[in-house]
Length: 288
Image 1: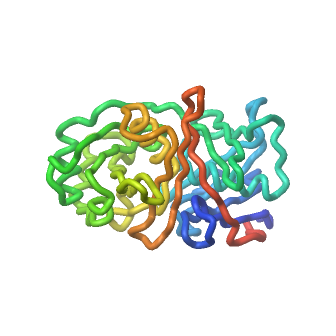
Image 2: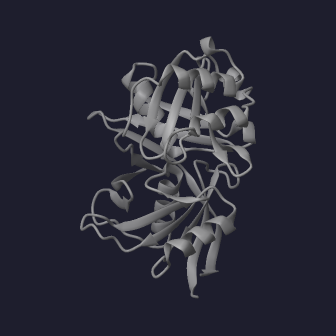
C-alpha cells in the first residue's frame, strides 16, 4: 500500500457541506478495479474518483469514476470535483480548456469565474418515455399521471428518465415509493430505475428550476444531493424544447437540507455548459 494524495471535495456549492461530496484519489496508479471499488464502498459517498495519466493524446488527465456497486462511464459532479482537485493540486491544462478522459471519451471543462463548467456530453438516448414507464413513475412518485406535464429520456451515460411537473413546491413535497420505482429495473440490463424530476420556480425567484434525483440503492430509494449528469441532460431537453431559457440556475438538494446550485449556459454555438462551484473540505493523504 502507498500513501496517496487525497481530497474530499464538496461540489455545486460555495459553502462547505451544502453540496454533493466526492472523494478524489489524486494518484490512482497501480490500483486494481477491485481496489478502487472497495475504497469507494468504504468512503460511504455516492462517488469516488481516481486520477491517472491520460491515454488519449488530447487529454490532460484520465479519471475513473466509481459509485457503490459499479464503475460509471461519466458523471457530472465527479467531473467538476475531480477537475477542481486536479487544478488545486497544481494541474496545468495544455490548452484553453481542461480535457478530461473518462469512460465516454473526452469531456472539456472551462473556468467560468470562480466556477468550473463541463460541456454537456451527447445524449445516448432522447425522446419521450414509454407510457408504461410514465404510469409507473407517477405511481412511484405518488402523483397522478396528469401531474407529469413533460417527459424525456435523459441518458448521457447514467440512464436517467426525466419528468417535468407543474411547480417547484410539488417537486419538494414528493415522497417516492421505493418499491414501485424499483420496478423500472425489470427486464433491462444494468441499473436503470433512475428518475429525475424538475419543475419551474415562480418568476423573479433566485433559481429557475427545482430538481430532485432518485435511484435505487442498497437500502431502498436514494436521493442524490446534486446531479451534474442529470442537469446536463435536463438542460439539453428543456432548452431544446423551448421549456427553459438559454441561461438559468437550477436548485437541487433542498429537500436534503443542501443548497446545490447548477449554472446552465447555452453558448452562441449551441453548446450547453453545466457549471458549479467546488470547495475542498478534506485535504491530505490516504493509504491505498
